[in-house]
Image 1: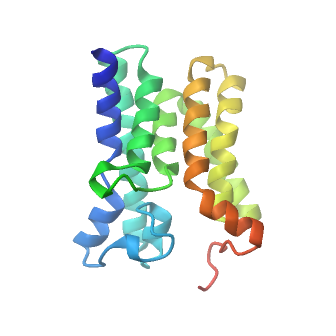
Image 2 (image 1 turned 45 degrees about the horizontal axis):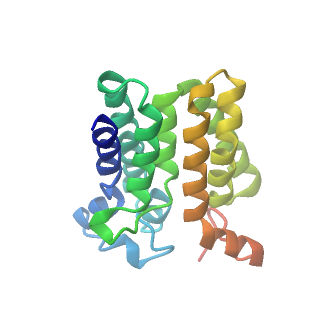
Length: 193
């Protein structure tokens, strides 16, 4: 029963579509009708509202971190399960016909709660990759793929399996981006549409 409750806590917290809620509340319509059709911060940024995009990143990260921290108090040892469930909830939200975002900000939030030094190292990897590539999806995928290795290197072996599962979810959610990268069509940050 505890496993089910812990997983449901993570999934339901992760499933709140903050990008969609914020853009609708700001009178910008349905963020799923522009860009990639995602509910995440990168797509919210395509509305031209940097403040809403920043708020989306923060809230998507918090909805990942919060259930992991709650699990640490009430279900010690289940933090990894809750982390994976939170990312899955964001990517496959039941409120939007099991469609959602790419999962990167929520993955960053759960990593911060699981092993904050690893999150800081992955944030540096993300920033360096973004600076070099100027492609948001490349930096996101690179940092989630690196996260299990970073966690192992920094002495957090207990989070490696959940981080591998999270990386798999995030990569699957980036499949359209991968296709565009292979065709040389993936947009660069700051480029005109």
